[in-house]
Structures are given as C-alpha cells and as structure tokens.
Length: 320
Image 1 (cartoon, helix red, strand yellow):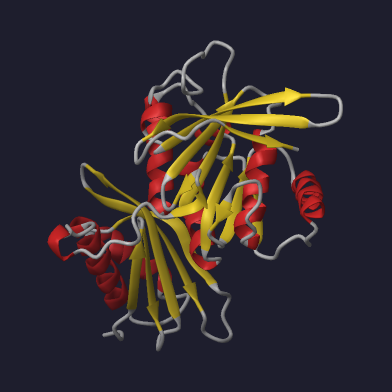
Image 2 (tube, one colour; image 1 turned 90 degrees about the horizontal axis):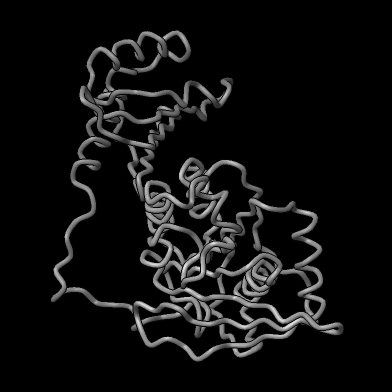
C-alpha cells in the first residue's frame, strides 16, 4: 500500500500529495451524474528523471471500479507504483469530503471577527461582493484601479481607508500595457512607485469556467481583493439568472473581498445594471457611478443603491 497522502480541499478543489511516492493528484469540478460522481483529475510527479505531467486533466468517475482499473492500466507503464492503492485513497478521501461538505457551525461557540470589518472603509466589506455599475466612460475602471492601488499599498486617500492586502485584477476589456499605464499614472499622482504583488490577468472565458485557475492564484498569491472588469463578459449571458447565480457562487467560493464592474445597458434605468434582479440581490453592496467631465478634470459620484449589512452611505464624490 502507498503511504498516507497529505489531503487538502477548499472551495471545490481537492489536492493530495504523497511525499514518498513523489506524486500529486488534483481533482476539481466535481458534480453528480446519474451513474457516478465525476470530476477532472490531474496527476503530476516530482520524481527525478520524469516529466512532471503524467495524466489529465480528464473526466473521471470516482465511484466506478471500471474507471479505476482502466486508469491503473494506463498509468502503470508510465511509472510503476501502486496505482490501485493510490486511486483507492484518492477516491475515498475526495468522495467523503465532497459528501460531507461544509460542517455546520454552533453559533454559541463561534468567535466572530471584528463586526463588519472592511477591506476598504467605507465601501468594500471584507469577504463580501460589491457591485460598481454605471454607463460606459464613467471612470469605473479607473476608480477600481485606484482602489486596487490603495489596498496594495495600504495608503488612505480621498476618504478611503484600506486594509492592506494583495490584489488580483481580472480584465476582460483591455490589456496589460493599458493597465500598467493607468496604474503608473495613479501611483505617480500619489507620489509612490507601482506596488509589488498587484496581479493582473487578462480574461477570455467566463469566471465560472476559469474558477479553478483563479482559485489557484488566490491561494498561491495570498490574494485579499479580486476585481472583475467587467460583468457581462465574465458571465457571458448577464441577463439570465442561470449565468448570474453561478458567477456569484464562484466569487463566494473564493473566500475573499470582490468588486465587480458592470456597464449598465441603455434600457436599464433601475438600481442594477442588467435584466436579472440577481445583480441587485446577490451583491451585498451596490454603487451607481456617474461621471461629470470638464475640460480640466473629471469628477465622479457614487450613489449607494443597496446595502445588506448596514445603512446606505451618503453620496460620495471623487475628482481625477
């Protein structure tokens, strides 16, 4: 039998590591179908003399003996170790963890963190989702990038007081050079250098499809704030609840503070950007952004249209 593996799981990603066997297995995207519990399995080795990648990611039924036998047959010629025992351990640990899920909390024994702690006071509540929406060309992205710099540096500016932390900016609209140019302008205005550990990732696929990779960055880089720019390409079908609900489930599973930018369509006049009311219901806090462009400078206003965990703020104003 192989040695006992180190087993970790968080937000739907399961990782096993066998030190003596120089082996790592990851499973994610677990779901139940009529004839099994399926997930995507990826197998890697750290053994000297071998290529790290062994197998996957492939669709794998964790409760099928036939599927395990077929995988053992495929893997044995690659590295001759006890694959039968390794897959038995993998399937047992992952299926039990998946079926158990998140344990219930006895509230009487729970010690809460500081009440309503803020990542950026007074607008971003810690580990909650916030939505920033408005017409195009209203400086929403500029403001989100300004917030990103404040969080990364810990600087308090313009009435905003951040809790420092690493930031991941997920960009569906522009490119890394444009992002760098904007951050360079913002930091020059603040009289500081571009901060380290402000991470940028260009995005194409939906956030739900990219979730395992984004989760990996959040965990490996110790991310505290995720910014998504913007909502429509991140969900693909922002008018449909079937797209909006999984999007916010993914943000929740990341376990960090999030800020989503949304461009309001011309037909929407209410307090959320698209047709689905879940854009209003699922974020914990929503702000409508308007820009007042002058010849010499630009001012924006933030109107607090929703607050689940406290009173709505008075309108806020910022000048760039």
